[in-house]
Length: 289
Image: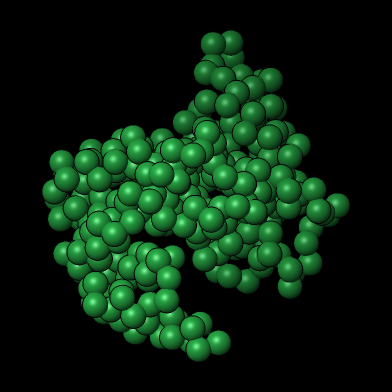
């Protein structure tokens, strides 16, 4: 109990962790975890130099161990064993933090080098999201490099953030950008959404609706995708997106913008799809579909 309280106190209260502080912790895993959390916190607070310093302390101490762990893998470890690969995950996370910190300071080459370190050396690394899942650090690092010369940012990669960005882009008429966010949300959370859908025969009760976050966000993104293609007058793609929503995620619910009720993306997709089909039936030959 003393160990737990002491570690939590350090995680929550420390501002700068150096090797002297690190020696006070009880295990290498505790030290690595604490340095990584401190680096994340500094990045979130916009203290980029501190974020890099904390990340470098962790890398200097545990990178060798992380390389050994990674060399023992041929694929991602399963959920039961993933915590055993703590240094692999922490070191890759620290390089990711460094990449973001350098990027925010317009140090593009340094940022690319940090992200490439993950891609080349720690491809099976994963980072825990407090909302309840692990995300692929190497994939995220690759995204960061690809998106450096664009105005696209996936933020914290949560389904909520990606769906919000999809809506925002759609509402401002940036349909292609909206599709990028929809695809990323679907790519990351489709499997979780399918599992949640399989647990339901109808809509979740209102007081349980937010528990089905992946289902709701993926379903909503399929609806936004359908709408974006509709406004681009790419009707065939629009109908395909609507149908995937109707067939696979029909229990999804979307919270209204004014925060007063849930509505069904699948039901709305059915209504819009009927209108599109009727329009195409009556349209002159040659119209873009």
